[in-house]
Image 1 (tube, helix red, strand yellow):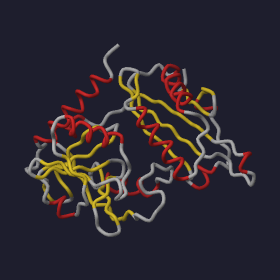
Image 2 (tube, rainbow, N blue to C red):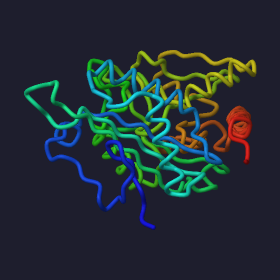
Image 3 (tube, rainbow, N blue to C red):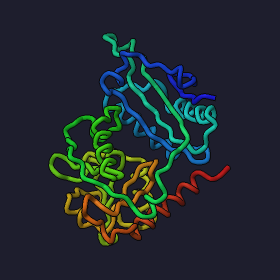
Length: 286
């Protein structure tokens, strides 16, 4: 059976899925997306993903065609249709075809689900290389801090990082504050304190980032959200990245600079273990 996708109220073969050539997400990148991960048939922090989706939709005046329950049911129906339990899912929403008459707009909702392809195991055991992104994040850009479909600069930077053998590129703001990775949030550890850029930087309110903050609070790990610079990155004892697909990924080298001791640090290991325990508790084997 061919891959099934959910598009505008129905599940269909991927080969039969079609979007309007006037869709605002296609023409202008005026859309939002959520990348999600399921374990044992349930989606990791789905409510948090939907919170972020609808918050960004309100902030950017992007129409989402259906409510939370409808979207939740669609996601699980799609997982079942593709016979998937551990999957990578993507939800994409746009206001749909552009129209002079706003009331005639028909928003687009697309959900895909594919077998999860995890990052290599050695990334977590030995750590990865990160490079510095040559581009800058502008706090005055109204799309910053939102997961919009206008993602091409991120993909360009990530492609350049991969060509250098790096797993990720670190973005800074136009005023030289650490922001985030192309597809991840960034944490550093110094003297057993965990630091991460605040959301107002602005950075994406990552779902894995939010989970790490919750776990730190629950387990008496001191976590501070503050403005950070390149000096903080180079002076860090440990660095790690987060998103729902990579989970907790240690960084042991930034450009030619060795991060800490050049090995996966103890705090990073602790947070990796706490994150894994959280997954196991929230997504037991059925």
